[in-house]
Image (tube, rainbow, N blue to C red; front, side, top):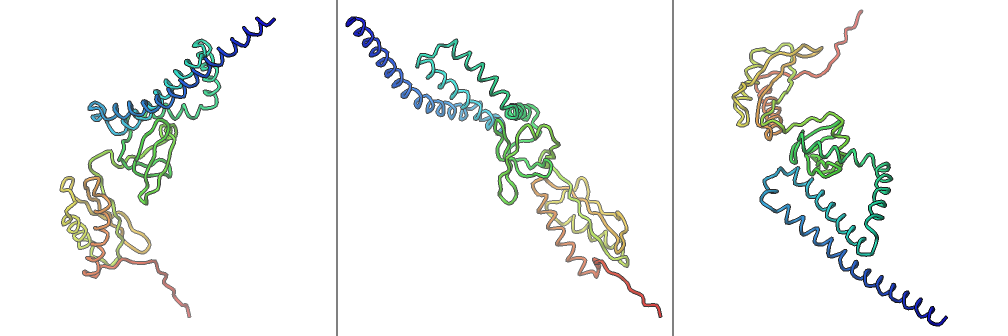
Length: 271
């Protein structure tokens, strides 16, 4: 009886010592492994090959590599603890099914991120609009795309949503057309108005000569004649050109006594 108790105690001690040793090893391996994962990721991202890749792809790959390496470290730690590989694989499979059902939206966003990188409808630095949201693409991660608005707010949009909706990319082409409508009084000289519009457009440093600036009457409203001015410029100069022309043309109208009408009502009294 004493021998059996001694053997039991010895086996418990051996098991405890073995478990403690494994736990200590895991506590050492886990933080070191996670730290190494970050270092390896930084090294890969700073490599010449990765630096040649588009910034959108760099952002995506950075997130993907760190997640994969972290998973490898955690799996290694589990194997060191003595969890059988077959049991671990079975556990991962079961957990994968449960997680897959719970994270269908996340997988949709992941697939959306892959599609964005393949088809590249936009890149980091492009200004885009999707629905009623718009901003400059700040980051494209595995699951989300972050936009920065002109007033410096961040908008986080799921990649799945972006790939399943219409996206307007204002930065895709090197040039853009500035469209401005000017309304003048019916008594205004049509040719004079056109001359002012075209002259102001041609004088601006950001205006492209090809295609040439365009100015014509587009319609007649209740109180005014409406003129359209269309001017091409480099995409990055769009807002500067639009604001400058809007201000300079108003000043020229004032100098030439061309009135921009406001809504008014004529009242006639019948005796």
